[in-house]
Length: 386
Image (cartoon, rainbow, N blue to C red; front, side, top):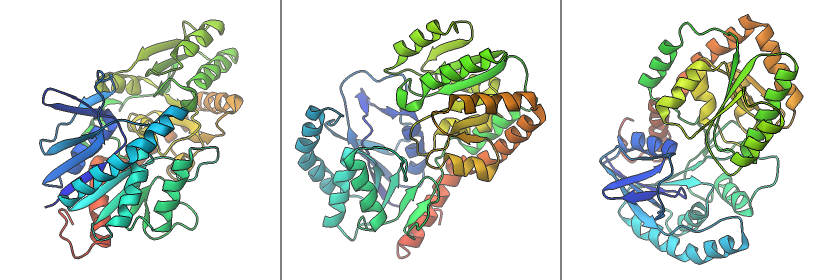
């Protein structure tokens, strides 16, 4: 057994004895914590109230080392990041002394600092996860480019896991899917939609931040086009974000008040109800790694119709579970959905293949794969589960 130090840029909150963070991250680390004596999370901690998307850690052996938040897209945010870097480096160096393996989550400001730490300690076992788009096609922050270059070049000094498989991928870079649910939750999801069929009205689901990058405004446009073509559709928008007012205005201007429902942030249980009800998960996002909403939808018999960015096109093509399209092509999204509505047997085939493919996205599969990767990279060490 060993101690794992996780270096993350995801802002956390603390109140009383509870330590909380972004829900999907917390669940992933809770599962990793089952394979280590101690799991230390070094991350920024803010004093503001926790948003609805946050959940507390459940694993009793998770402990949080707080550092101050810094960063942002503004000039002031970038200057603040530079000022925070020396403190981040000191905190990582100190925490690493008591850890047996270091896990760095990129891309983020503190992840870039952790890459510098990697130059100082070449012996400590380490593993990096690049959660973003490993081969982006558009503009991105310079720090993201630097982190990707560092990780791909081998300078980090340990295995790196990424979404998707890419040409000329180095041996130390491993393709690994983004875990989304437990094996038990997958079985429950599949059982709960055993009688699911394509019916009317056709149900579309968008789940995520209401912002331009995620494509929520394009989802409204897609709905308007489907209705213009005569389809009876209901669209559920689960989430919140900076573009909520723009979404409301667009819904009003398109006359879609009866067709589009804004739910705000939902609990996992409430979101599962929408997955069970929907026929399509629509995500015309500009950039992703692998979005959990697609695999969660697949587990519940919903067909993904999403952007062909990062690993999305690869996964959907290999599994034949959904359709990947150019991000900005509203007509293409509407035509793909219309075609499947007119061919329910094909929709059913995609839905069933999605449930089969969802087996690769369990936390249990993810953790076992990490242990195998660490065992291969550091064979002299003893890793639980290896």
